[in-house]
Structures are given as C-alpha cells and as structure tokens.
Amino acid sequence: MKLPRIFKNKFIIICIQFLILSLFLLIFEYHFDIAFDPLTSEVHRQIIQFLANYILYNSWSELIFIYLVWIIVGLVPIFIYRNLRKAYSTNLLIFFLPNFFFYVFLSRYSPDYFNLEFPNLIIKSIVLCIIIISISIGLSYLLNRLSKKDLTITKEDLNAIQKETTMICPTCGTQFKSIPKYCYKCNTKLIKDNKE
Image 1 (cartoon, rainbow, N blue to C red):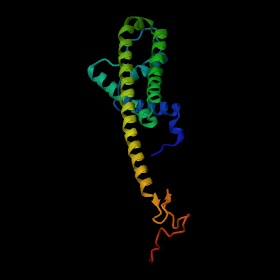
Image 2: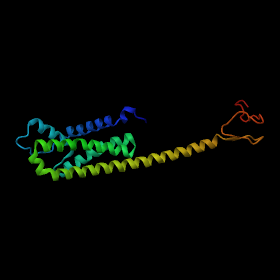
Image 3: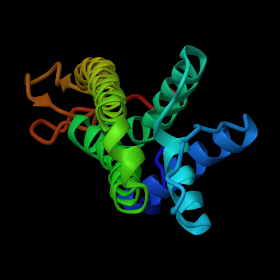
Image 4: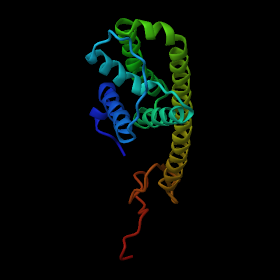
C-alpha cells in the first residue's frame, strides 16, 4: 500500500511522532519530578516540565515506560520510509528537539538544579538516544532485507512469465517473445481459434 506523498514529509512525520508521544504521556499521566530553583517562574517551570516528561525518568518502571513509548514512536518513520538513513535521521531529530530545548531552558531558568543534576540527566538522555538509534537501524535493516526477498520472488515470477510467453514457430523455427496468431516469416497460423 502506497502512502500519500504528504505522509513522507519529514515535518509531518515528526508532528505525528510528537502527537503519539503526547497521547501516551497524557493517557498514562506520566510526570517527571524536578526540584526547580525557587526563583524559576511558573511559565518556565511548565515549559521545562513539559519537555522533561518526554525524555526523563526516575524509577525502573518509568524507564521501561519511556523506552517503550520511544520505541513505538520510532517505528513510525521506519515503516513509512523503509529507508535506513531517513528513518534513523528522523528519529534522531525528534529525540534531539525536546532534549536540546529542555537542557537550554533548564540551564537558563533553573541553574542550581541543572548544575546539580546535569551528569545524571545527560547520561539518561545519551543511553535513550543510543537505544532509539540502534532500534531504528536494526528494524530498518530488517525491513530492507525482507523487502529485498519480496523483490527476488517478483523477479523469479517475471522470468517464469517471460518463458511462458515465448513461442517458436513449428514450421520455420522463428522465435517470438509473445504469442502471435501468425508467424510473420512463413505465415503459419500459430494460435487456433476457440471454435477450432
């Protein structure tokens, strides 16, 4: 089944991925706890919290949840593109965006928490990134291998069809790559009518 061209646009795919991520976080009411600096404004807290929910976790159950959600989201470009490079670059981009803005906002508006927790937070982000990229590359490679097998079957089928549609005139030996009614060299009738 071919998808419309608009669904192969990287921006559209990233929007779909963010929508899926947001739905999972909303449905399961996922929330990552941050000890903000006292001077951090409410607006900045909400932005930082919103971004942190996409990428960070506190416990093992939250780790499993975040990893599963990102793996599910990572499948979107893999199945749409069926191309190794496009799939992992799209997944890398969607992972980079919330991480980049989270760390920028956190360092600027809650510097004490950022300085205290940065090594721990960045390790979590790097490990999650490695897992997302590994899964993207692995699944894209697997899909490519499976689709190449389908192509070889199709080539074999085409070769069989080509053999079925070749014909040799019994009178003069002329070879045809189709099934004509008459031989163009000796004018021998090659196909009998249905009545005959």
